[in-house]
Amino acid sequence: MDLLATLATAGQFFVVIAGELILLFVGITFLVGLLQAYIPEERIRSVLAGRRQGVGNVIGAGFGALTPFCSCSTIPILLGLLEVGIPFGVCMSFLLASPLLNPIILSLLVALIGVVPTAVYAAVTFTAAVGIGWLLGRLGYGRYVKDVMIEGRQEPCDCAVAVSHGTRIRRAFSFAVSLFRQVLPYLLLGAGIGAFIYGFVPGDLIVSLAGPNNPLAIPVAAVIGVPMYIRAETIIPISAVLLEKGMGIGAVMALIIGGAGASIPEVTLLAAIFERRLVAAFVATILTVAVLAGVVFQVLSVI
Image 1 (cartoon, rainbow, N blue to C red):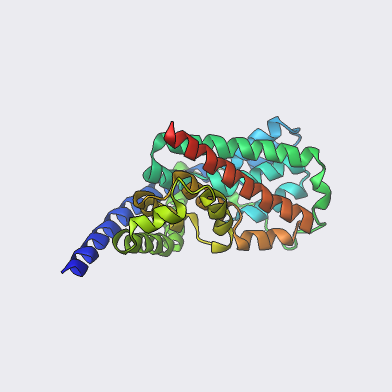
Image 2 (cartoon, helix red, strand yellow):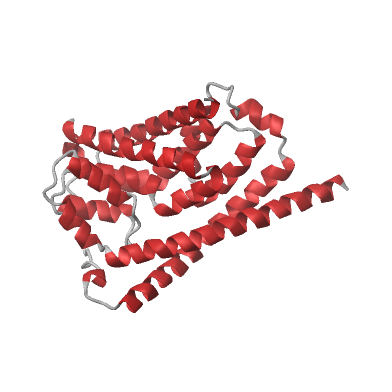
């Protein structure tokens, strides 16, 4: 009887969290699709071109927060920016902000931790993206970028061509549907794992391993996040349960940032265009941001 009750509780949690995240994801993705329909990649390049360090880093991080654009991923966009001569530090601000600040992740975080904590997260990660991009540029890390040519690079999409508002809306809808189909399995997987933890994993166990009183919980969570390669759409619903079970908010945020900011596939792609020293600096940067953000959240949670 206890098993049936636990299964019913876990099932109820799965339905609620999955439904909530799906609705949020579809709505925000549609808005992102509209945004990219009116702000094509070429326009971003024209704005960034000629910008110096400082202001350029702020603009680069801001555009990074608006990705993805069209069907391109962050790495091809990064290559395109470097190819047309955008300053290296500005490109790094874009690269750092893109996986951590896009509207989809922020919307899921609002559902997880609320509006104010998400605003704190956005402020911390945006400031880090701007500052670290500027610092890497000033230190001359641009010399560690390999001479990679983009063979067979397609011409920019026709987003910049004058089209009707109806066409833009249809494109945004198609974008939302396409991305939803790709991400739905990860959302359901995350909700399923979260439901299992919610129903079957004792809260005392989570508190003892990753509770707010464990000083190693935050750095360990940041390091674990990288090799886990769990998409943010998957880890966020799991994090909701971990928080409810007693995991410290700092460790949860470190886990999310570590996994979203420096996943193994992304690092592998970067190794094709960056020399080892720069790849190591990138990973170290993400881990540092994850730990610092985790500490900030943990401190704020007890104030």
